[in-house]
Image (cartoon, rainbow, N blue to C red; front, side, top):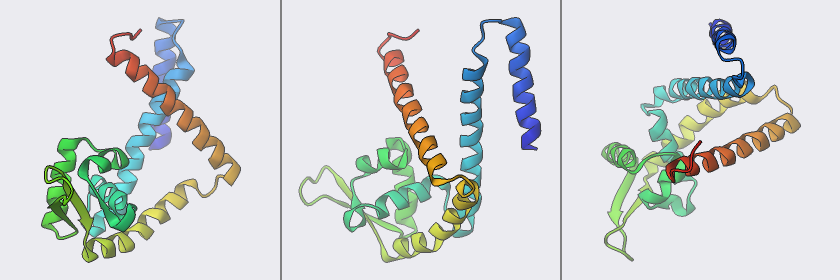
Length: 176
């Protein structure tokens, strides 16, 4: 199935290239492959954590909170770490509180801020779910050598930094 999708994607780009000769085919292929990969990674993670009754976003929030000192953080701090927008973070934390996986209380230092904290039940769930996710990640990445993994990490970081600059220019009205 993936091979068919890849062939179709490459054929579409080839046809587009005949219509627009200056088309940056390699650059477009890179972007499409990254989008394809992101979609399928999300699907893989959803499948790995579904038996634990979690969605992929909920799992990212739980693991981001778990990784903080005393498994405690403010929702705004977790937005960046868990790649969530504030509105989605509210929905996710509501669901996690309802399931008794985290608590949400006003901050003692600033009553306008909330503090999220993992419960014992939440910590236990992360300990049970994480091996399933890590097993899938190892299957995906395990064949690459450490050197190849490090090179890929460097290239993806560089691409993210360039993307951030492009997005900043677009948002400021200085886009192409």
